[in-house]
Length: 63
Image (cartoon, rainbow, N blue to C red):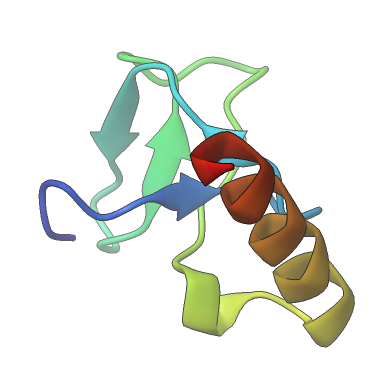
């Protein structure tokens, strides 16, 4: 996954913390894998509902 590209939680909230790449290529939250690590997504991989939440938070951050 590219540097400088936002990564999102499943619900559309932006992930700002550390992340690591799994052997299957997926990005997960946290610098190291743990039981609390969550899968991260690119904007295009989110559901329509999550995309709407992400758009709203991006526009508020710029505004």
